[in-house]
Length: 447
Image 1 (cartoon, rainbow, N blue to C red):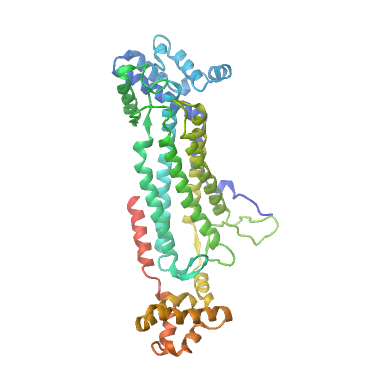
Image 2 (tube, one colour):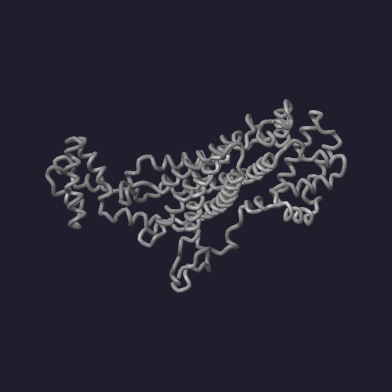
């Protein structure tokens, strides 16, 4: 049977898994605790010396992991063990000011958004890298003529570069979306137990604004713990991006089929496609992209479900969005690594593309013949004539050109030489090459 995964050493990790380790999340929470103390010191709520001490000690490397783990077993609480240990390391009086006026979700959600922002920055870098690979691919295939296919059938000629231009256009819009949602998603929350500012009173909004300043975020206008639409928006965008990635993976997978043979993902020497069939050159990486796309899109409903939080807080929905976020981000990083790998090393076969163009014996040029003939006799009348010839050529396996040349309704207006020129697909690619080169230039301009 076929093996399921490519050699692991061939494709590097995007680094997203490391971001979603418990230790990195803890450090992000500690960063929020430090920002909270500093913001409160700026307003005279916490003594400045205590805030400085808290900020200096808010480093996971300074805390006793054994104490944290022991307290976690005893309390079963998300952040209390970390707060206790930070307070102990700070000593008195600073330790008494740790976590002042905050509730767990304030710290955890804001900290998790710091982690998401780390992943977000990786995504931006990888999208730029993928766009550069696409630009190179679009340029080298701008004039590479192949069949355009609609409904799985030959439509009219196009170029492979036009296909890549479509991918570039989508990715550029995704990049715009990633940038546009930053001020909506990366927000600091500090509203207290129910988001009412009760613990900090009139100074609450200023404390939250201070936290946002220290973390380079935006303060929430209403710091309600039930607001999750911004997180659902981000996962929805990852799902949308996953759909584009899956479409690209599926397209290349299809074009790698033996019957098509127009493109091939990188297959380094020594790669084994099957334990029993030595000839196999399988689209392993494209298959991974397709699978990752499906799983990524499946997380969007979970994120939308998590946006429906009951009353003023519900840990169930917090757990749901946390799981959706970590899984979606890891999948996105994996997919981007694979997209760049495939597109950077994609092999194209223009001879096979040309052979496939000729499979229909010129039928792919039926539109060109119809429009040329229609200029003399009208589009609908020309459509009927060309339709009869095209259907007869397909069903009876006859020459399309010969059938046209034998029809006096055609030869009254088109000579056999003109018919021969009209069924040559190379001259009927519209603006494919121009669009491919324009998309490549736009992709490079963003890098």
